[in-house]
Every structure is written in C-alpha cells, then in structure tokens.
Image (cartoon, rainbow, N blue to C red; front, side):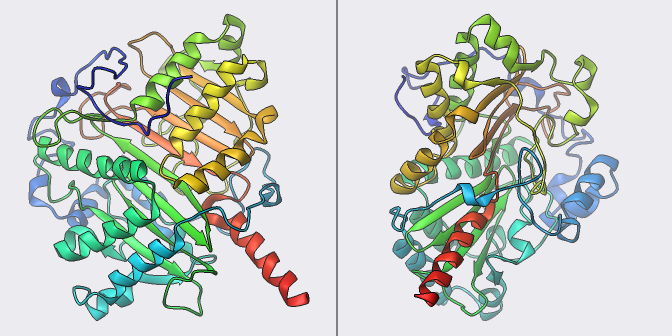
Length: 446
C-alpha cells in the first residue's frame, strides 16, 4: 500500500503521481464580460449574492441554502431512513486536543481586537440544538450571515481564528484547509473578483452549551468554519471529537503562479480512487460502475444530478437524506484493495488529529462487511469521474465538476468537490453528544 498523504502536495514534487487532464484551466478562464463574472469586481460578498438572486439557477440555490429552509427535525443521514447513532461508541479519552482548542478560542474571545458586538455575535446557541450549526454552505454566495466574517475584520482577528483551526486540526489537515482558502484566493485573482473570492471569505461561528459562554474541557461545544470550497463542523466532548460533515473543493485544483505556485489539492483522493477502480477485476468494475456517463445527457438518472451538487448526494442541507448502499461491496475486493479503500477514507479524514483519527478508522473498519465502493464515469486516465465509499460509519464522495467560474459546461479534471458525511447521526457530533448525555445520566443515577 502506498504511504499515507494528506492530499496537500506540491505539483513539482517528482514523487507525485499524475493523471492526464483533458482540459487546462488556463483555457477556460472567462473573459471579463462573461455572464458568470460580469461586474464581480464591483461587488461585495453580500451584493454579489443579492445580484445572483436575479439569475434562475443561483436563485434556486440561495433559497435552498437559507437557514429557514433547513430540514427539521434533524434525523441524520442514512441508508434506509432509520439512522442508528447507537452503532458508535467513543472511548473516554481519544486524544482530542480539547485543551489547546479551548485555549485558542478563549484567546479569541478575550482579545481586545474583538469588539463587544462581534464577541456577542460569534457565540451562537446550543451546540446540540441550534439550527445555525447545520447552516453551512459551500458556494461563494453569502446566504446566511453571522459570526465572524474574516474578510470583514482585522488581521489580528483573522490570525486568532486560524489559531483555533490550527489547535483543532492535525498539522496536515490545517495545511489542507489552508490550501482550500489559498486556492479560492487564486480563483479570485483569475476572475478579478477578490472582493468576493479571497483567502478570508469565510465565516467562523462558535456553539456552546446554552448554560455557558466559554468552551468546556468536559461538556460538548463546537464551531463551524465555512465559505467557498471549505466547510468544517467541529465538535468536542472532552478529549473526544468529531469533524463532519465537511466539504473541501477547488476551482481550479492547482495554483500555477505566484508565491503558492505548485500547490495542488486532492491528488491522493483523485489518484488512489482511480487506481483502485482500474485495478478491480472486470466483474467488480461492472458492479461498482453505476453509469458510464457523468450527465443526464449520458444516461445519468434525473434524480442523480442537480446544477450545483452535480453527482454529490451529501451536500449542504442534505442532513436527513436517505442514500441506499450501491456499487460493489468491498468484501469482494482483494485484501490489498480493501486496505486501499480504508487508506482513501483516512485521506478524507486527514484533518483529524492523530488520536481521534485512529479511533475514527477503528469505527470505520468495524463495518468492513457493509462497506460499498461506487463509481460514475469512465476510468481511463483522462476522463472525469465520481466515486463514493459508503458504509454505516462513513460516506466519502469525490466528484469532478462543471465550471462555476471557469467556463467548462461539462465536468473537467480541474474542478474538484469532496464531501465527507458521517451517517447514522454522527454528523455534527450528534452521536457523540448522545453518548455523553447517557454517560451523564448514568453518573447521576450512580
């Protein structure tokens, strides 16, 4: 099995594996008067969102992402409509860096750089019940305002928020998240839209127990950090933590000029997924491949595609979605291929610190017998594709997309979306909080 890598690499690394691309992002950068970006340099994030309400497809998405339209009550992502959070058991101490994360949050809250109004705004409601915790979205459209908007604040506050990320994520995970923000800034440069697309066009919101205004070392608390192509929902319960759902993406998938030239995202997910599919037996390839074409014009079912999620099923505001198991059960794979499936799942979860990642992978491996690998598209070196790894404990999606700012109208290998859902009520730490409450109840009865 190839060595583990976070997926954040430099393109000029001679050890980097490659796949061929059918189109270069340099060939599909829109002209300044293109309808997709016309006038973007005259807009703020808010006014850009307002302007998109007059365009049919973005208006549909804006309405869908509005917090008032979130699915209620929360049930959880599942394969059968009956999510079962009791399948998860978290050890008392999984090595989560709760002390460092809480200290970083307190530095932010205590900073003189944070105005009283902003300090009041960033602390939201209860981590378990507040709907805003589920109101993340990955487009550049600034639909649900609130919390700290980094590009509307000071450099000191920006650094303090990034300090929370650094304290909460693994080093490789933080670099990967940072890579998403830097690539977003690069896109802003490409389309002359830095007021809308930049490395700080992200929101940070803190969620605590209703009885507290500070993060706890024992009780549940969490935060969300989200914006274009990067969404993280992080929950701590003592020295246990959950990160998910998450969205990470890039348009384009690499930076080719400037101080970050050579940065390329998601190469490990991309290449390991393709190599796995190409290495399967012909029989298992047929079981895994749900459709040869990537679009409805190529035979993909109408209900398997929409203009923004495309083939993704686990996107924003899909918290209660029912997605049956599909594709090929990995029980039919060779031992080496099954290990590669778990290696890919580990890449998807690489933002978890070492201890929580180890425990996460243990829970994922417990469901090996009910883990499925599914594929949409061809699997030659040049064609775009989608793949999914799905079990009761994981739901990882990788997809090549059409352009949103770039002009390609069919999927291309320079625009990537990845989604990591946690089925059966593990999203947003719900299963973890449930176990904590049961533990508190048992202590009360002892």
